[in-house]
Length: 599
Image (cartoon, rainbow, N blue to C red; front, side, top):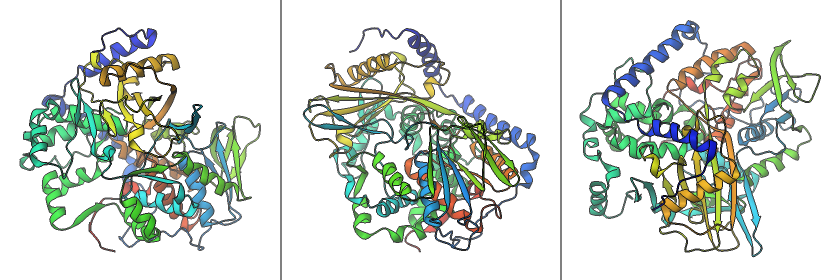
């Protein structure tokens, strides 16, 4: 038991008041009703303040499932005379440039990056420890295969010729089977489909983390939401559907911590779980929806994903497709940054792509039917036929007074601490790692940890020496009101304290890396889709010359960002300036019921 006080100075005082107030909250039925009403009121306020939303022109509505947007189309005003600026060189910016150069190889592109490196949050570091090399990831570390967005990544890997650098972790690996949640004072292994039925039942009935599971099975008896409710929080939705808030506080909050580092009481269920939102509306309940879709062999898919599946999936060669299908997760021998570096190499081979490193864009405006941008290190401005911003929404909003709605999308900051131990016997259990729900008391989580990844179990083959690699993630929504953050020394101390308390690890690591990722994960708050509809209208002020894409809109994962970049470029078939492509056309799409195996 870890009972030594943490000496975290200024940070500790902020954390105590913030975390105690947050963890003390419990979602009652009264609060759930209040959240639903607040969501309606918030969205009504949006509509009332912008009545012009009712006349938003749908620039590129998808009238049928067979609609195709071909990247190789030559019938386009995107010509060699076009000069495009891309703001940001993270995976979204690189992917946008990649798809544009595939569409028109001679197009002129300026890629702006405010720092001295490309790749954004893809940060893989090879560390020489004397006896060999270890790889540390301070951003995303693995990808999944099987969704439409993942097909775009696979096709890109194939086109870039980096298949031989792929590393896969099989679906029956220990990391795939063993996933844990820390509650209330120990690690609880999550049930695994296909394992002993009675074992899973015993686990569900004996562990406190699954309290509320029995009422959840009666979900199909509960009435659907009112027709005038257009969005609500993740917590409100699942508490309403499952008949209580225990599972929500213990399970769902942990899952959201692992993906968004966010607060389930604020995040939009319509944006994060569109399939479940659709099921309740069209089938009356989630369980009914699952049953009907399974019986009729239906999947719920967006028109954009249908287009990707039809056009991209057939291009993936059989060997690669089979290999990724059999994988639980995949990465590369040199980490996920291999992907961004390969795109960079591809782009640098084009004489028409220029990298504007250490150049921060300060403003943009429409001048003479072109977009004029001003950078921090130049006294003169540059005009472009089109600009694509892959910056965070609030950063794009700060460049002009005409995009206020994008400022409504907040972000969270996460501290990532990588630790390497030269012993392979350091962990009491093995698996993917564990997540920490919002219901954990402050004395069990004073560091505001979100979860711990067992990197040495998750993906193998990146290191040349044995040992144990762990990553501790802290902060997220718990740090929303902080004005300062822990330094490297404090971050190291906090991470070691988490591992000691939860896993009993007392030995010192051989290597530690601390990275504070400021504003790294956008938060899709309640009303997110309405913010985007307003933003789509506001982008009309730029007459089709400005588009947006990136992690701030329809998915925060690497696969999501690559797919969104491809979708944006494919919508430019009718030409820059002739038919606007804002990057937000998909906002008006609804899910479709598609028969499994249909073409």
